[in-house]
Length: 179
Image 1 (cartoon, rainbow, N blue to C red):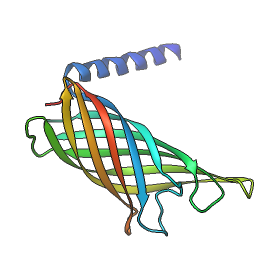
Image 2 (image 1 turned 135 degrees about the vertical axis):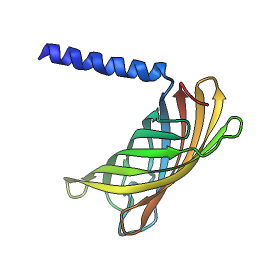
Image 3 (image 1 turned 90 degrees about the vertical axis):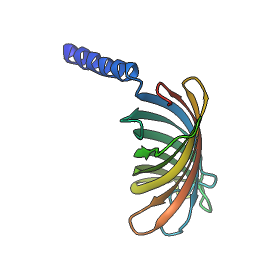
């Protein structure tokens, strides 16, 4: 068993070192704000839904990147006595059709999974649920200095029937292949 773990770890390290050497990997921090658009299908019940997270990207080619993002939110619920904790993960494709000097606009689409845990204070009970949404966004990467970019992003979330909400994000990304 120990040998299998060591071999797996070696393969993962070898793969990631190859990706970094090929200038295709990026990692960053993100801060996000969500807003509901529909009372029937809320993205969150958190009163002030600000969160933070981590993004890991892989540049497929000069125009296309795939990224995995994990975000965490926790605060009091709006109009309900209790707290909500959300763990939101999504995988998205980012298409950058052109760049102008230090600026790279993009459009994105992906799938989001949100695990919501509720702690109802008055009822002394807990509950949780999972929801899946489509994510459609647009944003801009601004090259700041060598291998560091500032990212501004906005997105709509669709539950399959209608737009459930939107988000705005800002982040910093260390990127071995900015341009």
